[in-house]
Image 1 (cartoon, rainbow, N blue to C red):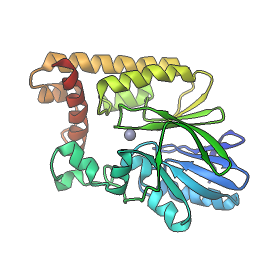
Image 2 (tube, rainbow, N blue to C red; image 1 turned 60 degrees about the vertical axis):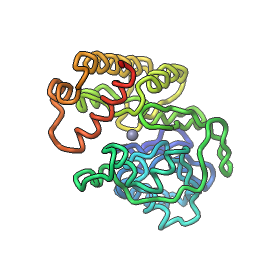
Image 3 (cartoon, rainbow, N blue to C red; image 1 turned 60 degrees about the horizontal axis):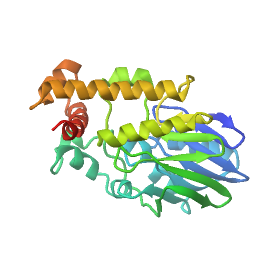
Image 4 (cartoon, rainbow, N blue to C red; image 1 turned 180 degrees about the vertical axis):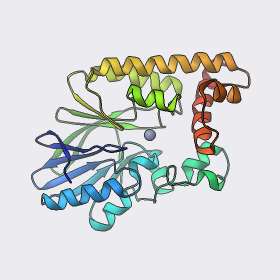
Length: 269
Ligand SMILES: [Zn+2]
């Protein structure tokens, strides 16, 4: 099992969710840990095969598919320090909050699924925007709110882990409505991403080889289209939007799409 080499000091396990590994000497930092422990197991083996010791995990945000492997890695490497942004940290420590947030009450069993609820993990340090020094690593933390409350990206040398601040066109087409909790914040975040032109950008899912500008524009267009659709379906947009986009009838898809719809509603009242 090999990770994809991005530079001398940055590697990525490309899967359903990308897991980043920053390397300096014999130490490593893991950026997000995937859904469940599948990716984390591969990363653990790779770290061990290369004689590397992970000293920290940075969780960009608290969606289950980004911190699911924390618990597994912590069992093997107990000195790991987990970093997560404020508010996101609460969801990482109490994963039931995610479906509760989506549902607006204690969640029904259909929403307590592996996709929405990962094994809980401690958070040792709050991730804050700006420079961050961990061991010999000099990292820059960039706020990227909108997709989640307080998502943050990670810049290390010339590589930018942009988490779920942008999605490749194939995924926009697949999901038909992307997930977000704040419409205007996400637009602001997307516009800020254009500053990262000279960087190798690693999104949270998949990869792209076009310019970041093209991907940003595609995401902005998507948000604009969703806003138009929600506006046309007001005042009670849910079934109208679900039907027009063909959102599957399962509770998870509808809960996720419903949250994005509510995030738009706040801006069109
Ligand atoms: Zn996410």
